[in-house]
Image (cartoon, rainbow, N blue to C red; front, side, top):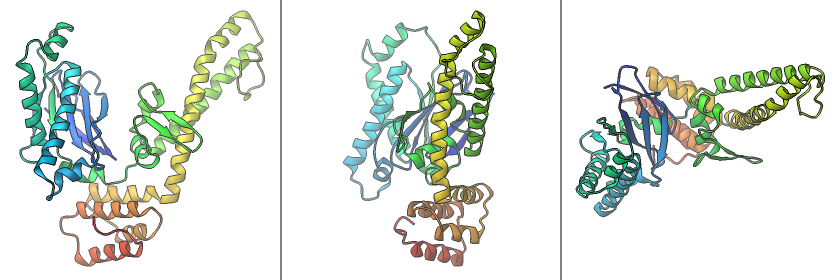
Length: 353
């Protein structure tokens, strides 16, 4: 079985290869940089990813702190195992658990395995009830558990995709986004979000323009067929003239046109807000520099230092410096000293670095 894991900001974009899975579902649990956990479910039929958070604040810190008490670690591991148990029980499946040896992932796997075994000894149980209500299947999903340290840079680096940008820059939480003048829901009911949330920001902007052009074209066609005004005048349904057939078609198209216009306005506002932050913080430069370091293994020292000394928040600069450390096993000491000096000049807290 093979899988391709693509970093996408705070989350992982998990896509399956065509020849893998053998009609199975794979669940992957990863630790996010903000201390929360991420569970992604990949269904073999359409490779759609569903994202879940078990809402355990600062879990990464707690699980990796040498001074953490054993009782606190055990309580956190049990809480994560309980959250996973609730998910698989809701789905009515008993997964095959896979994880690397050592570290938090193995601890969670052991706790979940013990909880599943204890529950399955009782008859009836949640899984037998689910099986009786559905068609019996001999397929079991695979639950793969990864420590966040498996690829730590993913949780630190800046990302250029739409969804991670909205999370990172605009503070999307529980599918809700609050802008200064508007509040939006971003979930599976939003077709544009579903289709474009992993696209790069420039591609999203192009798609918004294309959707707007198509909307205006459809409005003009309705106006022409009904005599509702000149080409280019937005259709509002108040000046419908023409024969009965065209009139009925226009009336029937009103809800769909209105929904499309609301969707376009929504994502235009989101993209405009993102663009303001991108320009203010030079996020495109951060993304490009970090991508070169992580993918190509190269860095332009002048670009790196100018970003640290230039625009961006202190957190942006620290994330860039940490990504630099994670990208090179042994960075040149002279270069490292320059990076540290640039951080101090920008008054960045050096403790994490």
